[in-house]
Length: 343
Image (cartoon, rainbow, N blue to C red; front, top):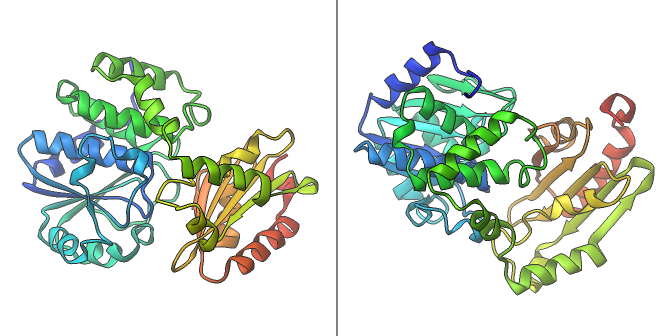
């Protein structure tokens, strides 16, 4: 029996919004990860199976190792089809905002979503949700937004409507947002959910392999280059930094997702508790931060990179050169209150 998380009032309101329209749009954050896509596609399949016209719109492309997910081929990438994406948002009856807590997290789509007349639902597990939706369902303690989707569907008595496609998407989201159940995963309820998803027909081992063990030769060579040439250790701060420029990425024929997980690699070094990955993009510099124990990398992201996220997994953006971003990071190591931030 799962622990009760949502109140009856929340569940009734959630159900009432699902009953309000026939055209649904599901949006999620920039650089969609496994949880963003998993939760969105799980809702997509549920709403579609209920007879609704449903679309998933992402700001930009998602990693190629998520292409196997049921429904991934139907996702609308706003960067590729901006006019079509804007039309779908404008015509929606209900917009589901999944796995993000404030409009800026969806990039250029934010203005269209904010201006849409549709009812808006937020379902998210990041702290400090902004007040921009008609219904906000926020659970910062939850492992993933995908777990929230499972619990919400069960809460509105739609468990029998969870088919294998939905179950695969939910499991992929839960798995990726916990690093293969290695962090944010010490909750017995998670494994009750996994049991039910397996009963729905998922092959959890196959999903793990698709996400974590099937990569291109170029990615593996890039990983070797990163570990040998690009990883810098700061022993006094028990921290590590990896940087990659666009030129370096192009050298290894980079495609979206090839650098996924690189930020976690230094944490396997004994004594390292804080790892940062700074990657140059076309318009900005992307920052990924990970930590162990009680080191709040989300606070570091907020103070120095206008970002945020979870205690041990967060991100941000920097508008400037990659060298300037590194300088900000190194200044942060010196300024950040390491004693109060945890040891």
